[in-house]
Amino acid sequence: MRIGINTRHLIANKMEGFGHYTFEIVSRLIASHPQHEFILFFDRKIDPAFEFGSNAKGIVLTPPTRHPLLYLLWFEIKLPRAIKKHNIDLFFSPDGYCSLRTSIPQVSVIHDINFEHNPKDLPLIIGTYLRYFFPKFATKSQHIITVSDYSKADICKSYQIDESKVTVIPNSSNVAFKAKSQEVQTAVKAKWTNGVEYLLFVGSLNPRKNIQRLLNAFEIVAKNHKEIVLLIVGTKMWRSNQLSIPASIQDRVIFTGHLPLEELVDITASAFALTYVPYFEGFGIPLVEAMKCGTPILAANTTSLPEVAGNAAIYCNPFDTKEIADGIQKLIIDKSLRSALSIAGMSRGELFSWDASARKVWEILEENHTK
Image (tube, rainbow, N blue to C red; front, side):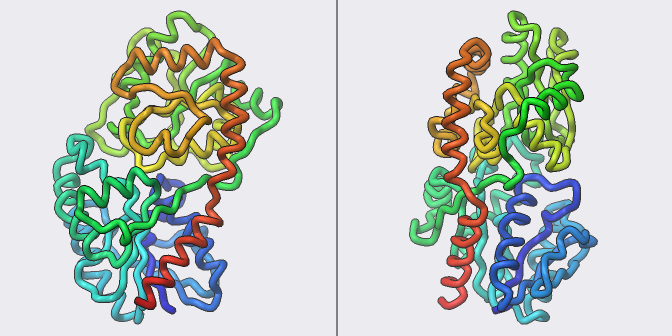
């Protein structure tokens, strides 16, 4: 079987959620199935880090897809031609986009459809593109994979898709995420926070991550707790997304930007707690990263987050700044709660495995190749 894969999110040193998902799943598919050939379609120069094996070949289809008009060019003109040229039997798309102009079977991964519910979270032209084309992609796909029961129900209801067409296969975290020694934790805090404890947020800095309310909640907490700071790891996704840092905490909020994996692991494992309160998530990989490190979690009580974190987090209403602050306060003052959440997280983290998820993805690909 010759499997074509959309790998346009594999960008060295710039990978976010789609990129990490693509890397973890695709690298395992290629390694586990040497008898099959994988054609990886990139939209820019291929970094050597993404040369996965002798049974995988990278093809660059330009130009880079940085605008909805270029999405159209890439998926509806360049990709169908390449699929035909390289005799692809099945196309796998880890970011949900597919081609409407090819007849071969396509399996897409639709992580969530936040753009349907919160259109103001994206620039107008991108949101318009997504709301117009994703119903078509969902219908065109022979099968859809998604990452949570919440997302499955949302996709089926919103796009009138039969439940039998959608399979839930959860995300996981990189195998590097695990608890770290006290020595490592001390060194991390010395580097980033002058030795004091820190609350952590990890994720792209886009509106649905709810960082503004997190900042406002931290301002409330910071008045009574001087020896703690807020560390925010991630990069801005849309230029129009501006955050306002309250004056009283400007010297207690640290933005790291994008971090390499090794540093992100150490920072996650050394955090006092993960404060992760998006108002919409299809999954929330930082939750699993924190659980595997034994880091206590405050999470939003919406969408997929309780499904993922289970008993390894305490929860708050992400639209209520005071409730977010109360959750942070509870973690700060209750040592036994933090210990219980840490233990629960280490146990629950074992439920999530990229190896297991990749095996299930392969089963879906095989089933839909033969239909």
